[in-house]
Length: 119
Length: 452
Image 1 (tube, rainbow over the protein chains, first blue to last red):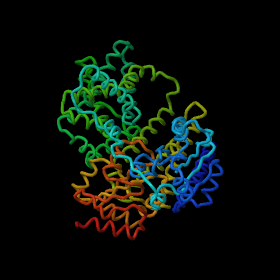
Image 2 (cartoon, chains in turn green, blue):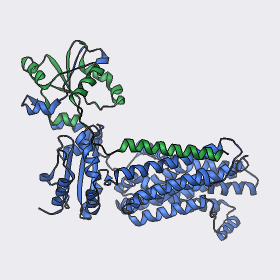
Image 3 (spheres, rainbow over the protein chains, first blue to last red):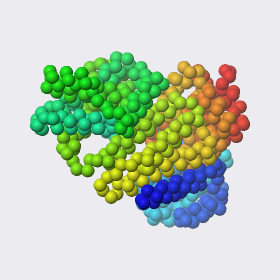
Image 4 (cartoon, rainbow over the protein chains, first blue to last red):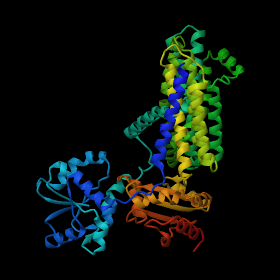
């Protein structure tokens, strides 16, 4: 009879949901990304990493040799940002990336060789 | 992302601004006036009297809003009543399209007239109306009415006009009064139900303080809301003669009934204490799933029906299971409110402390606060007694209210947790900008409760 099949279906769906929720909601403390993870992420994303020290050196030599882009939100930028940095608020979602691609190109300019630092 | 646009020299500084600042490297801050334009745009449209085209556009917008109200379950109880009322009428008399339309219009008018009372009362009493609609007594009444109608949809009793009125209407007004009266009575159900959905509109009407305008706005709103019912009324004659209107129709009524019960629970959730808050919705979901999926034995002539039932039942059970698991694993958390001036006012009236949590998804300490501190049993019970917790989620930029708050409280980053004492004044000395373990957080909560 069909009702038996439907009961099996329902129970398995419930079990799947429970496992899913349990896995997702375990009380874990979100981990701070380690340095290695940052490096891997950079490799996947095709960009390089610069440390604060290196950036500071470059900056002292010539403060206009690189374009600094502050990707935090506007209110964070307003309360304080690296000197000469431009603000380009990015939320870490694909939607925001897709929506803002054109604007970013306008901001960065047409020189594809330009030295860009995001933070 | 810049890489995909073809730029070659792309770098990222993972330490970012905080370390740059710590090392004393040159920084700037933009003038605070940068968002002035944003705030100007966000300011509430002044409550002046509307005239000419502006009036027309506003009313059209409100009409569209009324149509959208059909997405809320408030109209559910009216659907079967409308169908049976007009269907029965069509069966008695010879269906005359013109007459039917006239009846439908009467019905619609009645409905709109009752709903308009909301607008008039709002305009006359000012902001009171919104407060009344959220008072425990009114919420309970709404919930009881919803459950009553749900039981009717379950088929426990039949909703009918009192016989005497029905007779009178049939005798002296050839039924038009009957239709109007039907609309008037049903409006009594709809008006309190849509109230919470149109709080914003009520506040707006209240701020203008013109009863005539309040009446007009809510009249137009209910015309929009009633339009689908009007169409339903006209075609309900045909609907009754539709084939297959057997078991599945009864099942759909039960489904609507459960949605109403669910909404009743949603309404009274803010006023029920402690664990019942969690248990009640779970219970409803469980009962609804079992009833709709398996206990109900209605059958239909089309083959997919048993599967439809099983799927609806399963979805309800899955929701219940998700709630139960989440609840068991995490324990109950504190209850969050969204920011509003009203809630701050209430806190002062109730002599409660307000904690405002500026939060973002990507911020680790914010999540630690949420996962550990705001799920700590001691903190949850203390918070329930004397605190109102407000969360401001700044994960997504561009919310004018949030921009305003960030400026008002001079927030420099997340997490920031702001404590307002029982007089509504911030205790700057207690402000938190980094994670604090539950024990110390409790100390903070204790200190803010005692006046300086």
